[in-house]
Every structure is written in C-alpha cells, then in structure tokens.
Amino acid sequence: MHDIPEKTDQYVLNTYARAPFVLVQGQGMTVTDSDGKQYLDFVSGISVNALGHTDREITAAINEQIAQLSHVCNLYHTAPHADLAELLCTTSFADKVYFCNSGGEAVEAAIKFARKYARTAHNPGKTDIVAFTGSFHGRTAGALALTAREKYQAPFRPLMPGVSFAPFNDIDAAHKLIGPGTCAVFVEPVQGEGGVHIADPAFLEALRAACDHYGALLVFDEIQSGMGRTGKLWAHEHAGITPDIMTVAKALGGGLPIGATLLTDRVAAVMQPGDHGSTFAANPVICRAAEVVLRRVSDPAMLDHVTHMGEHLRARLQELHSPHIQEVRGLGLMIGVQMDIDVLPVVQQGYEHGLLLLNAGPTVLRLLPPLIIEETHVDQLIARLDAILTEIAAA
Ligand SMILES: *Cc1c(COP(=O)(O)O)cnc(C)c1O
Image (cartoon, rainbow, N blue to C red; front, side, top):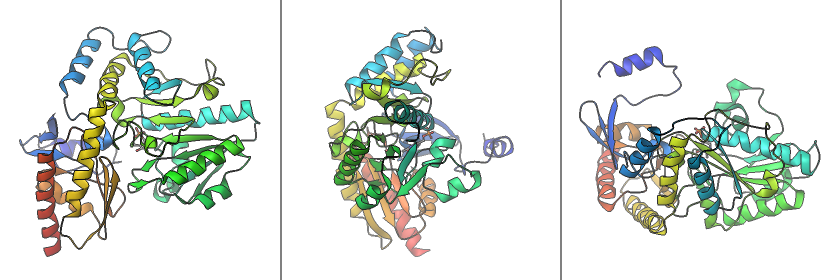
C-alpha cells in the first residue's frame, strides 16, 4: 500500500493535492488508513457521508438492489427511480425532479431549464444569469461561468456569456443587475466553498421579489447545504423563501454519485422528451441508497440532532484559545472557523492528530462532519484542535 500515493501521482491527472496516506476502511465517524491509523472525519467526503461511513441500512439497500437490477437507462421505468422522485417532491417545494450524476450536472440542467423557460414563457432574448461573489456552482463549463473564483475561471475563458455577479448579501447591488433580460438568479442559501457564509433571509426575500417582478427564476443551489446539513432538510427553509428550481447532490446518494434538479410544474411544463438527458441518471442502486438517506435525514429527530450538535460544536469551538480565530459561524453542522492565518497547516497537522479537516478558501477552516456525530466526537475534535493550535502558536 505504500506505493499507492506514488502510483496515483504517476497515473492520475494532477487535479487534486491529496493527503499523504491511503484510506482503506470507514465506519461511522471514523476512517482507517493502510497503517491502521484512525481519523475522525470532519469532512464527510465534502458533505457527502451524512449518515457516516458504511451505514448498515444503506449498504443493505445497495446490496439488495445491485443483485436485482443495476442499470437499465432512462428508456425504461423502474420503481427506485419513481420512489425517490416522489420522496424528493413530498419533502420539498418541488413538483418534478430531473436526475443526473453529480452537482455540476444538476447545475447545468438548471441553466438549461431556466433558458428554455425564459424563451418559452417570455422571449428568446431573456438569457442573462445573475450569481454572487463567493459562489461555487461546479467545474463543468456552464457551472464554472456561475462560479465567482478568478482562479477557477481564468484558464478556461471564454466562458458561457451573459453572467454577472453581485456582492453576496447586497440587496441594492442585486437590484441593479436583475432586470427584464434576466432568466435566472443562482444563489447558495449557505455558501460552502466560498467560506461558509449564510444568506440573509432579507436578501433571499429580495431576490424572490425581484425574480417575480421580472419573470426570472430563482435557483437555490443546495448541493452542499441541503439534505439536513443545516438542521432543516433544505437550508432555504430557515428563511422561508421558496425557489423555482433547486439543485441537490453530494449527500443524496449516501456516498454514491447522484444529482437532482428539482422544479415546479410551471417550469417543468416547458421541457419535452429529447430536451435533456443522461445515460447513467436515476441508477436504481443509487436511487435505493438515496431513498434511505433522504428518509433518515428528513426525520425531525435527526434534524433536531443536527441543530443541537451544531450549536454544541460552535460553542465548543468558540471556547478554543487561539489568537488566530476571528469568528466561528455556520448553520447546523455546516461550520466555518474564520482565522487570520493560512489554514492549510491546520488541516495538515490534523492528519498527525487523527483528524480529517477541510478548508474553504485560504483562511477558513470548514467543518462538515457526518450528521450522526455525538458529543464524544466533539470532545475529541476540540482536544486535538487545541493541541494543533498550540503547536502552531509555538512554531
Ligand atoms: C460541490 C458543489 C457543487 C458541484 O458538485 P460536484 O458534484 O462536485 O459537481 C455545486 N454547487 C455547490 C454549492 C457545491 O458545494
């Protein structure tokens, strides 16, 4: 196993800086590397493993379905597909679901749906999209155009035209950009990659009103913030503002790849057979896994647990004695620790101390633990972080 990092470097395209160990097993809050060393997971594969690693019910659902039927494509009906679509609609604002395989694809679908809706319900010139500073909507070509990170966009210009960015949470600036030519406004109710920033309820309300005024669609990207992560099933429920389209992915598949674009009947009505599609989408095995995850994370007892553990974790983080911590913010178990130093050394020291940690930009430490986290895991995190921050202060 010691040659695995070398082999990865030799044969795998260099698009990620990987940690210097090889993970071989996971259970609950913990993953184990090839030397038998254990790590408490505060990353969840970037907000994916909501029920922790190797959950028994997910594993059983996968095993059962894969032994029965693993793929047929979208030319045929399957029960897992219909069942998951029904559950997504009954647990959200949506009337219809489009399935795909990742977050980026869910955003691409949302762009296409918004364009077709504007052209059909209004006019073909209504194609502009408004998004916000600090946004992250994905790496695919369309989603990249909505992602306000110069570093991500610069090498790949020209990007999809018609996109403009207003400062996040700035209502006046948003009003200046949203107009008759706008087909959609894309926003994360809680920005993840951009540094864990929560959209003000008044900001979302203003976007809703401006979209209604100009006949534009409001699109919430809940790929990271959805699926119970913030203590509500969907983060926008905190603000009480409903979108026309919502993108979901990450935690939905219980570790397997799936994305979904949720929409209202009004928007769905413009899409016809042949307008969009995907070979792998709505894979029956993944749909069965997703049904387990969605049923479990939408349980009010689970959402209460997330709220309680989120408050507890933020309170404990606030007690840490480090001159470098400027702010602890977040909603539920989507937490950012704003520091005044580069946090990559903290993430790296975390490995030594048996912690998987994540950054969000250069100076924000991001915590996205499995939603099944208990107080004892928080205790361990705080003790280890305390040691790490002491080491960094001494260095
Ligand atoms: C991760 C993420 C995406 C992209 O999802 P992929 O599955 O990596 O393509 C899009 N939007 C948000 C808010 C995300 O966090």
